[in-house]
Image 1 (cartoon, each protein chain N blue to C red):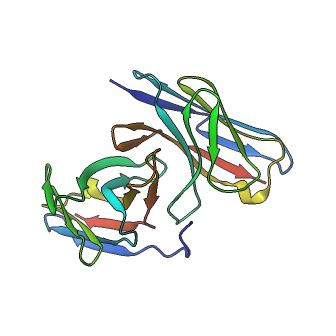
Image 2 (image 1 turned 60 degrees about the horizontal axis):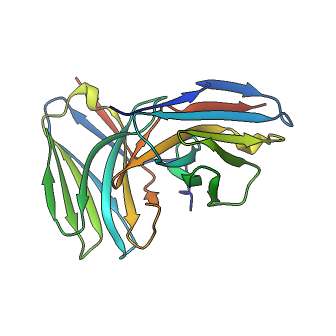
Length: 114
Length: 110
C-alpha cells in the first residue's frame, strides 16, 4: 500500500563524504531489489540492483548491501557530490508475481552541501 | 536503445473534467507497462499494469482506468476527476527484472 506520512527521512552530508542510505523491507519472498534516484520533478532513475542470492554489488561510486537475515538493504555512495542530491527509493520485487510487481519504500532525501 | 515518453508534462484540470494521459515506449516490443501515482512526499503506488495489448490489471480500486490500444502505448484515463486525483503520474516499462520510468506528468485538479 501507499506509504503513510509526509516527512521523509533525510540525510545531509558534505561534498566528498561517503553517504549511506538505508531501507528495511518486510517480504521474505522478495528476490530482487533496486535503488532509484529521483530528482525534483523527474521520474525515478535506476541506479543499481541486487538479487537475493547476493549480499553485495558494486557500481560506479555506489555499492548496495543486502542483509536477508534482518531484511535490510543499504546504498553506499562514495565521494558524494552535489549532483547526488535527490530522493532515493529502494524497491523490492515479490518473486511470486508474474508481472514483476515492485513495492517501493517511502524514500530518503539526500542533501549534499558543497 | 529504448526510450519512454509521457505527455503532457503538466496538466491543470477542474474537478469533474475528463483525463487522458499518454505513455509510449520506443525501441522494444511487447513490454510490460505500468502506471504509478506519486503523491507529494510519498512513495510510488502502482495503479495499473499491462502485459500486452488490451490486457489491463488494476492494483487498487479508484476513479481511474487504463487502456493499451497498441503494443507500445499505454493510456491512463478518467471520466470525472476528483481533487484526490492530483499527483505525479509515472509510466514505466519492464526490461528483464528492472522497471524504467518515464519523465512523469504533474496533474493538479482544482
